[in-house]
View (cartoon, each protein chain N blue to C red):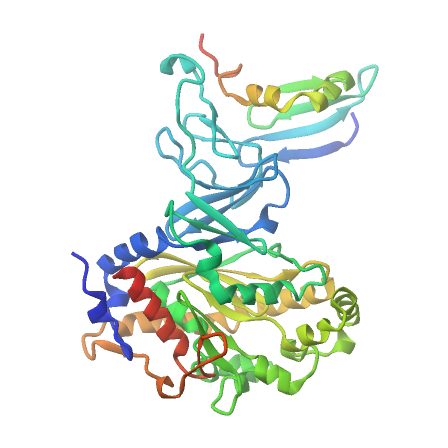
Length: 411
Length: 71
């Protein structure tokens, strides 16, 4: 029997068992990961007909493919015969997939094309089988989402105002598109996935956890997450949230100040942006990239993109890549370098976060006190002109938005 | 023989591709790297492949079409 989520999730605190219980994790798979919209991949990862990549929806292994007609498919990586994995490579190009176990062969759109020695089945074309399919798929600005629920709210309803943050990201490209082409790093964390999701827009931790990278890089980012900062934390509803740093960047008023550089050092990029967007380019270049967590698994951290893959109540894989802007090679080189420096194998940012996740997972299993506190800044929240709840730069507004939505879908 | 063009491979198959100059006109030499089996394709055969309707190619990809047929 499921626990009472209303009991475990209060407005100012959440119960530790939410992070440590295998039963609750099983509930989450059913009610969140296999019921709501989950980010899967980006169309640029399968740019050519025949391209495919292995992706995931939680523990489910998903093949995202592009068939000869250009259509994108989300297929489950499981042979209809004996359930073997059909694709093993992380990426490839093939019009057909052949299971290595008994040679059953599928089109990259999922239809069963044939099987060896067909008389054992009464001849060719006798089996009404194929690869499983994620029932619903929808795309926003090239971001492909899937849902195991055959019916339910549309992706546009799910994203709500958070869609605007994806739009802001793609507008940093003079061609209005991003490309996910830098390759993926995978970091395994012995921690519950929600510790990661909550941390992504927690503006309270950077000055502590990331003090070393801010110091080494002589970065001003730490100051954006302080009590004096005019940046805000915003809950978008449906569990999505952002750290909106634009008030600080607007105050600075310098194009590319958000990226720690200047117009003069990126002349080709700035020229391309002004050519593409005219007067609007100034605002785009000043305000920079979003810092948004799209429930439950997509985190855009300005110049890098994370996906969160839960595998067990205490095991999560973080997939991370550098965002690449179409038509902006000058920016892309720097974004890749910064990504490697912050979240690469020897990166200084994610290693610190992951240390906290794993310590946190051990800590929440302690018996007393039973609760985690999420009240920070509740007394100074307000509702903005879009009807969204906003808190200070270091307030836990995003966490409260996360848990409010979580309680709704788990109840 | 001319230099090897390359190996066309994915996780399902790997085929070495050369242009063979030993015959009276150049022809493509294809070698299945997993079995060593070799096939030559001349220019007209290649042109035929270029014009082969998608459905015909699809039939050939059925594992029971030839390689793993009954009897």
